[in-house]
Length: 120
View (cartoon, rainbow, N blue to C red):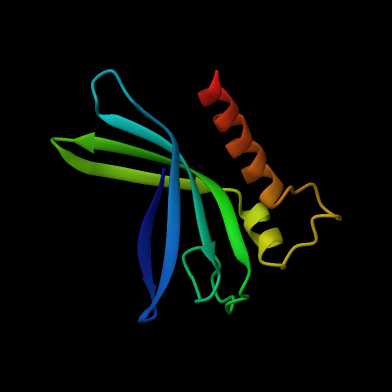
């Protein structure tokens, strides 16, 4: 299931779609690890992902891993990881034929594997 969300960047909004692949929590429920795919069109400047890069208009599909730790019922820390090389390739800033970066193919392979697992 895809979830939709808006992210504001310099008073403009970017529509982001999120598909949760898996979500796990620690034994004590104090740590949550989410694996998800974030899809958006790079039509606004997103300095948190591509600092200083003007919008390219390219579609991006990017796996993410989020690790959150809770203490006393509040978020103690949140770490968000993604493949920056794949992101740069998808927006046209890195030639994936010259470096070992898959680009959108890695996301499509992940979604294909998850879909196959659900069918079993």
